[in-house]
Image 1 (cartoon, rainbow, N blue to C red):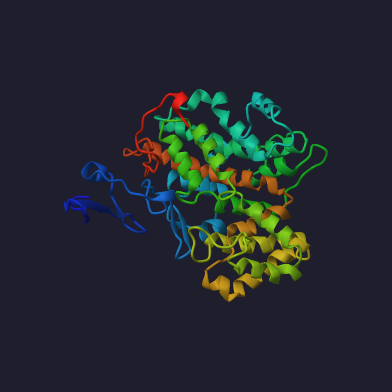
Image 2: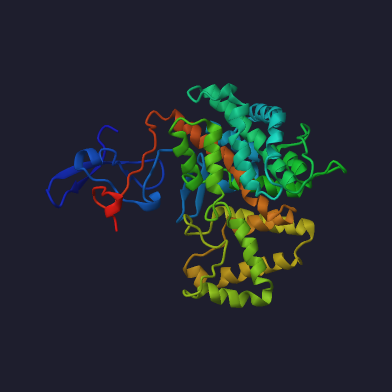
Length: 433
């Protein structure tokens, strides 16, 4: 920028003025470029959680929480979820535009060829207890990928970065399905090249060697949509973790593993599982009024899970799509009379009509519906976050690749406001009280 807009920062002690450039993106608020702040002023900024700090420039995902907008590479999430499948979205996030028929065919071929995992990697699972959480297993197995696929981890080479991306997209469904099968003591189901991406995952996750498993197209489309809606979400905690790990030059499998570990946190990837636990606690539609009152009581620790969002102050655009998908699945499976589903739908209705929730803009978010859909598909709640990680892997690897290719990329080094003791001397142990 030849003549950037600047703001003046005045040090109240010295009355010295400093110019800080303003930078503009294509969408969203302008940012104050503070890279030279410490050098010029000797001051840092203070922003716990980095909620007002742009940690990078990115051309991948844009969110307007006030307007309820989510764009992948400029495309509205509503259009992508309605008109594309997950692999098309994977191509979009990696290549910055949607594929044509030939490009999509090549991506399908590549992911199909790489869907198997190294046979020795299957022995890795045997080192875990059978009752280990699938996310614990996933962290270990994905972290081990660099020990099996170290032939293409030169992060300075774009072709190596692309191979890593393809391997992660292709192998994640196999790894996640194997985590589940191991946890329930069933044999692994190997991928079938004749099946589509989501069909193959459902086959490996829910199929059995004892019988033929034929995925229901309505359910396949529902799960495909879940993957699309969770593919990326700007600079959230896990994506920022991937970028921070990658800034040191760590290999992409290690970086994605760091993202998986972050996603495992209850405040990030465990929300849809928490929704089902909440519904079980409420128990029956006759108890909804009681729990709504508890949610409104400031002195009561109970909170309605799956309502409101850290970023979206309007209706989460993903939630609208997931709500439609939820009802499609319930209709297909004839589950509208299921106790838990009836409870969820009534809770949704009351919350959408209640002035308290409307005023505070506490709308149902994507986690409220996705947990219901996954449960309807026969997937246990312990697998919800693992499936989230499978979907988000494409966002993580696209963000990582963008960061590695960025000429302004530096190793992450946040600063701090130190509040500990000032310098002091060590005294002999005999004199310490």
